[in-house]
Image (tube, rainbow, N blue to C red; front, side, top):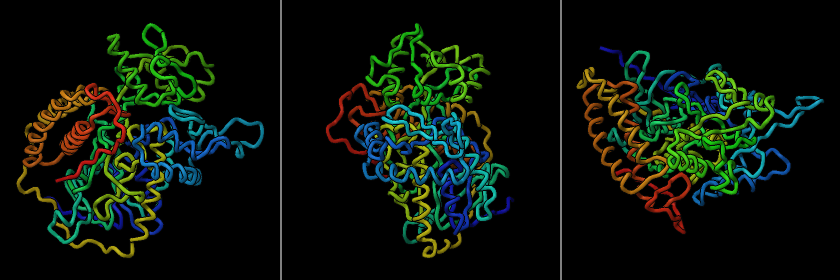
Length: 535
């Protein structure tokens, strides 16, 4: 019989990317924090983020302009109060990162390099250069810098290779009120479920792009936090808005390698297989149009031509410039036989970012007392119907700080939860049919790509919902009878978020931003967020 293991902390942070690390570091000065990482600490979307972080640093730029660009990209569905709050707090968040040791690129200068201004790039949808970056590996620079500090902090306990299974709430235990009390977690190292008791819990688990067959995200992006919050009674919003990054490398040996928007920001063109440009025919901003427009244009051209991919071409820029600004992309492509200074890069769209998620307020607080959601897992109202490039890491940083301040203000008022029941696995056995998980996994991702992808229709959505509901029944039966595993936990969460995506998409009877339905191509006059409420 396995030993019952229970951990205890002031705050449990589930997720170890920019949002989770930032929250943990802000809280650790005054509280004990457990930081849960599903895989190795670095293995999250933050590490692979290339482009940068948007913030007003240039004298010719303004916060009002950043707000305006975000609202335009969000297709009239952003919460303007949230957008303004984020833009106003952006510079403070960047300065905190700089104090932590994040080395953003600076302009070349003949004088004192330490006083040189930061090099700012421009990406699609932005009217000014306002993207701070560390070459083309900004996320890696942020992740590694914050990781090093978290590992050394005496008040932060890092648990790697732990999956969150479900939140523990007073309502689930038939206790008074509706508050989160902790979580059951699966220790992948020991292959056992353990209990973590906490006064506060924060979800920083990222998005759910793994629900699609093609994605730029790492394998862990399985919508765990969204599914757990929904099962715990939290509202979910705007799940129909899934951002497909226009330019993922099309190569058999690099299925999820993303090619940063900054390439187009620095002048790269999109070309058909015959070499002709096509973006000017779709939008006056051409390659610098927001991602939803660019992704749909590529999808349209590929289907029209029967092409496997289109091409991203920056060969007209000096080779030294390309190699200096995009060293990661240059080296990766060169290892695959593509010299981006001489050859156009084959690209396709891929699922990249979840604009919807768990509903929160300006402090990151969800509908469940004591539960916070920050970063891609959350719906704050910042992104609307389409996320503006380089606002994602920014949201992580700004709202992690806001959540930390809110939690700190309550620390002395909230006692530790009482005794929590241990995980009960007395009625389950070891599975002898792991192939069921693999088959269900493949079917789910394939029909989501085909029916709930870049272009949708009422019939496709209805078909997807029927298949999703059949899978849910099979997976729940499997979950009830067998011991948990990483693939089973992820599949259970993915099929839940798939249902939420489909239901949100079916409720929106228009085409706006990232949601395009051929049966409802028009825009409604007074759009509102799509909000789902648990039974």
